[in-house]
Image 1 (cartoon, rainbow, N blue to C red):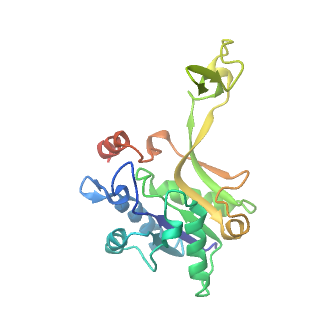
Image 2 (image 1 turned 120 degrees about the vertical axis):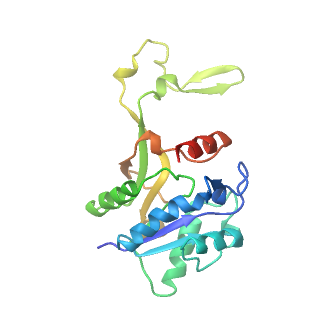
Image 3 (image 1 turned 135 degrees about the vertical axis):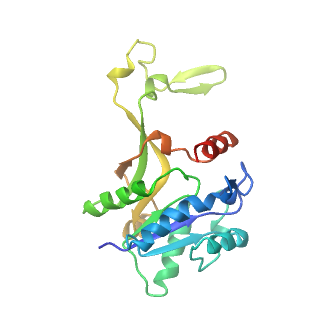
Length: 230
């Protein structure tokens, strides 16, 4: 059985929505919806360790109250807007390895995806377990509308097409579905992230989720939608 370290990343310096990771969602802090599922996985021995990675003592206090282990406060130099996600993952790995605790892979569950289900995470773990040579896994949803035929870059007031056939009358049905990474679940082997400083490999496994559970809280509009759904 693989040993998984689950990291719930929740830094304090959100700009678009103040205190986003602990904002009230129908009487509960946003963190609650991710922590509840993660604790269920832990109690069922599907994961080996569950930790909150934050630079905020306020968030750490809330995480501890909700049942998460908070063995460290994330250093400032890996907590800003420009810090790469692999930095806090490597920090957590190094913290535990310094105590002779080792993991086969890391699962990242961002609080900003509160609509993911227990079955989503469990299914992603099973998929990763069954694949003997995968370095990483990402969760995605299918979108039948988006494709290169309707995508453009902007150059002053002109739309620059990404596909030269954008005006040739090609039907949407003639194109394959596009799958969009939703940020709800990441899994990466410890060996891979330590070797490459990357969380997503060149050809990651894909766990498909429905679009309805793929909203990632980023804007006030997202906040309204999530509150209504939950």
